[in-house]
Length: 307
Image (cartoon, rainbow, N blue to C red; front, side, top):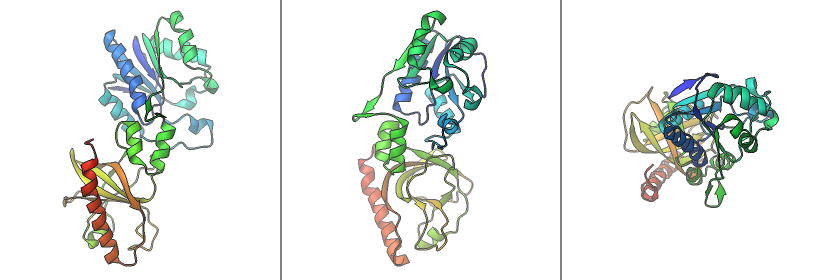
């Protein structure tokens, strides 16, 4: 996939427009349609996204992201997108919607087709929408496809619903809407070896600052190391039983694994929350609970589909 950090001429594109945070099931319908139309017309599929969420500029709120930009680009490439153009929202936010169509979409991409979701907006104050794209399609000779809401279990698949699930630690339901498990990536760093002293060595990573936060607690996860997948138990939060200092930790005990992986890159995918963070009376009770946590994963894994 070709990646462009600003506008470039990519003529006869089959365009997909949206921010695409999460690249959830609804987003994938938009993208697959753009890819299908491109192949049908012997053209190229082109996605236009922004570096940061537009609401970060339009409001005081900082919108937590489901995917980092690098993760989003990797998934777009795996889906088969030919080109991704990354724009700075602030630079283009003042352009009126009609001018955006004429001076951006038409001028640079001369699209054969444009595909968006049902709630896509663009241009100054978000005044542009699917109706405006539809009104201009004959004038500029492109096809317009508006993908209707994608519904799973009576829920419209949306980033706001998915973010809410993740922030509650409800990963089974977020997976149903994303189409994959929420994940984080990080490099293993040397910790204080507290877990090793308990008999449960753990890999420590730094939780990505640009990802949506999860509740403090203990989670059943999978861990990808060198393209091999393992089950694991992840603790996110503090270690109140063994550490009096409030150091936020992200540490994962990888089941059936005992190798030196300092400096290795991990991909950790969340299956389900096991329990809330707890302070135990003594170390022995903590160790007993960890044994129960491991037993939980051994039972639960038989009810989880491969992903």
